[in-house]
Image (cartoon, rainbow, N blue to C red; front, side, top):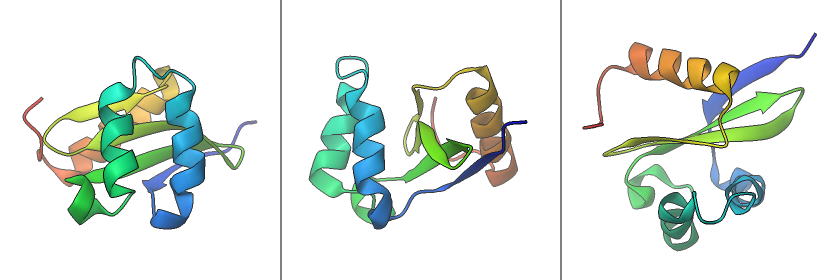
Length: 94
């Protein structure tokens, strides 16, 4: 059985986050450009970066700022991000 977890990423997660972003460079250009400039600091990034882990490996991201942007997210990751967003309350416009 696959163990999954979702959490807010920290600066120490930058390398793993960039690896996920680089897996689909065109589709992820918006978020990649922000992360390359600001890192994963929520204040500088303009929002939080959430990570979805399967069996201890970072598989998907979700930028939660002015927009909610899932990255490399399959159905299970999308459900986890949606649940987290619902519990946090609306912070984004889309």
